Image (tube, rainbow, N blue to C red; front, side, top):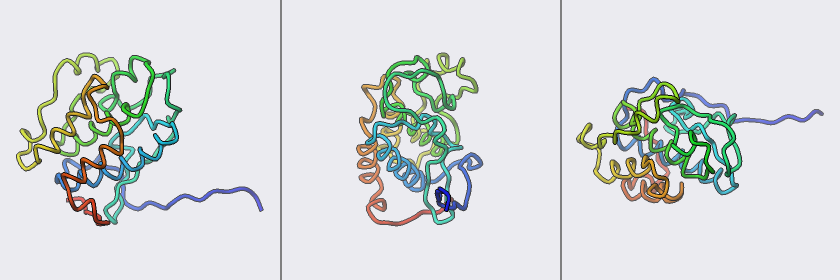
Length: 192
């Protein structure tokens, strides 16, 4: 008789404790998160904190984007929020934000899952300008079984100049399906 809402009960946990994932599993994670971002972006919203702690890996092999506490409408950023290794330059510079800021974070997530390290290893926001001076090593050079196409896609999402990034979450999903045909099927992959 009083208002209430329901939420999905998620089993599993976040990906922070995972050292690295096989590239196929990483593609599933990125595809699932890109799907959530596509829905948000289609409504003019940004998550603003896509990070290793805000992606929940379920026991049935699916990734769920969680923690929408920093969500905002696309447009001029009024505050700097997020997890430093996953933050796009335009977030830190308080510029107008669009979906490409979340896609930068998705690229940073992919890099971390593929390599076990951050593309831009900053602990504090104040360190980002320094770490952005060095281009990340290609994931396929650090982990030889990573397909070059996936390595290039992740690096393209991590481009500091947003005009060079993947344009949309839908484009990211399409390219991930081209790299991993299993994404065309409704198949879950376990954490290896």
